[in-house]
Image 1 (tube, rainbow over the protein chains, first blue to last red):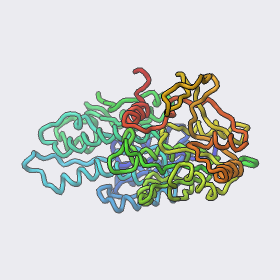
Image 2: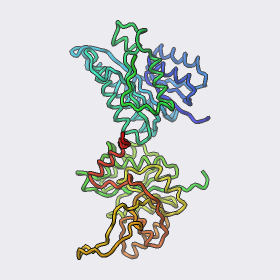
Image 3: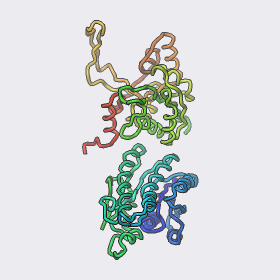
Image 4: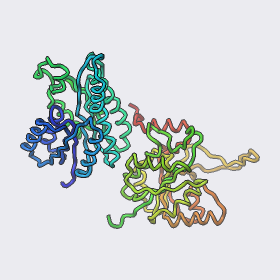
Length: 237
Length: 232
């Protein structure tokens, strides 16, 4: 089979992004190229080493180093992706950022960074790739249950995820002309670094794991995933 | 693929719809959130046999039309031309721009067209074919001047003419030359080609593929395109 099928995962260095990359690496699902976006870090390097170590289907691992808050650089990286891989069939908008503060303590620059990573980056990825002539098979936007109801201390994060949920609804309607499926997932408490920032005192072994969410994302790419048509798929323990 | 016919799509986009859109041509009217023209472009873009699109624009709106083609990353090469004074004139002026021996004809005011519709037309063994719809009501011939009904029409032998259509380019060009020589103006090309002596065939069309001309049509098309019409 020479036909290539690619998945692009943002925030692939750790947490749900890395777990999703590992799921796609292990799965015999026709995906030939894993396009991984993250900032340069020791964790990202380690994730790539782990992926190379267990690669039973000989998939290509293509890392791109980018801070998704940097829109100009993100646009450049997407041009590189299209030039080098040629297509993005499945897009997982996973990268997330938070710095929880009470309302009166929110630094505006930090609010802007939260919106840039959590909202504008998924927008830019989809719009730029469309403008480059790419049509997607599936787009998975990772929002959060925190975007479904505001919580004290999480203003910037909740607001960004609420916006991502509604943006996903619009994308789903508008991209139907290409036959693209758009699914928004809202994980509840999940043992990631981001969760540690939001809830430092919680024992991460007692809550949902990144691998569990990755399993749901992989399910969406399978034949049975076609039957999941939820405006916001809540994944929680 | 060897032996496969390639088609030029002539996409009519010229008419100003004063009834639907305030202050802008109806080509930019939003149907289910997208400019109406986008639906025809995306459907055509998915058809391998179409290798070029010839698109006209209302006077003064070329930049806007070009921007939409870029924004929606239409892959087929697009040739732009100004709209004529009438639909008849627009078609005639666009024919010389087509580089293939076979052309498809469509209008952006029918956003519910699908790639499958174009493929069905292409698959017909005939050169000149139009989608047409049976008429579910009775049509009477009248004399508007006297206010009298003048006879009876057999509705089984009448069809509602739709788009898209396909033609052998030389047949359609001949038909337009015939109309010009005889001072005839037609509102569509299937009957024009027939009157000019060409064989034109019809395929049963779909009632979904209606022409959006009124504000009510815009809402109905939006409802159908929204995908919530399955009784759920």
